[in-house]
Image 1 (cartoon, rainbow, N blue to C red):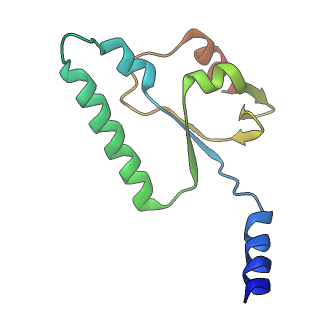
Image 2: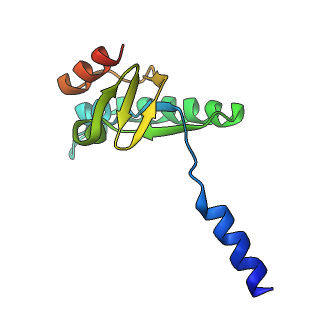
Amino acid sequence: MGDYIGRVSKALSSGQLVKSTFVLQPNTTAWMYFSGKVKNPSIAKIRNGFKDFVYRLEQRHPEYDLGSENALKALGSVNGNKLRAGKRDYSPVVIPAERGNIDQQTYNLIEKYL
């Protein structure tokens, strides 16, 4: 049984899950409204809207990765007609409706991708 489990584990861990869709999280938009002193209802609206969007994605079962602008700053580039984050290439890139702003560097990267 141990050999069998070992072979199955090796087979299952040998491949890579490749997701083609990149969903940009609205983190920087939420930070625009954050205050340590006052609870801003805009943050709840952003959170709930994005959460509902992700739930709808999950119901349709597409393969996607969530990514932040900070990840794109550090790891982002354009590879042909695809957006690259680290070692992964993505197309399409989804910018959810909850996004109220975008960092200049991210904007430039997405403009180059388009």
